[in-house]
Amino acid sequence: MRAAFFDFDHTLLAADSNQLWLEHLDAQGMLPPEALERHRAYMRDYAAGGLDFAALDAFRAELDASLDPRRLQACRETCVRERLLPALAPAAPTLLARLREQGVLVLVVSASREALVRPVLRSLGIEHLIAADSEQGAGLERPCFGHGKVLHVEHALRAMGLSLRGLERSWFYSDSHNDLPLLEQVSDPVAVDPDPLLERVAKWRGWPVVSWREAA
Image (cartoon, rainbow, N blue to C red; front, side):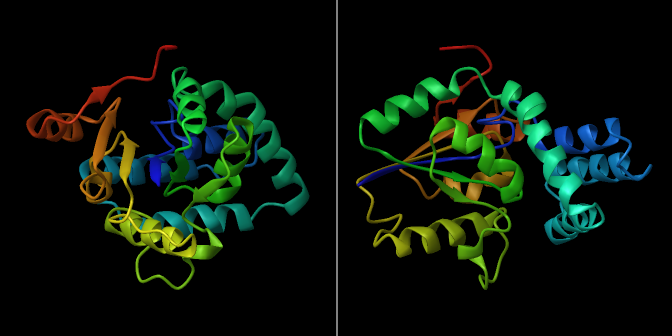
């Protein structure tokens, strides 16, 4: 079995889905005044490698919980249609289609929450998602972020009767140095529109560095 793992934000999506979501809520007058700046502060910590992921995930969950459920769902659907789908990296769908034609198992591994990621994957024909709040990861000792992504991937593969080491070949496509733990576990790590630190590491290790910002 061969498997390809994909990060979501700034990889399959040429943007951050959570930032687009908050901007959409803000445009609808549904966002507390300090929320955008608070999220930007978390993203600065993320870029610097010092993110408190538990605090960020709690912030996102609390924000969603503060909104009327019916209006929340309608806003999500509009955000996906008007902001997230247009932000797909142009070259990504072609690669995904080619991998599926070759019989490669495709999984998305994201530190974002499932409600934002799943509708986009549905449009791409991707079934398998490991997200920050995925039920199959409940009870694991680490969240689906950094080293935790390796644990969540192994847990999901185990449910399929597979393992990372047992795969004939494996790819992981990511933009972020925060994903180095999983990049180091696959046979074929690929840096996609990488941040400066991941770009330096990839070039030093001889990993491919590619851009999906233009159609293939």
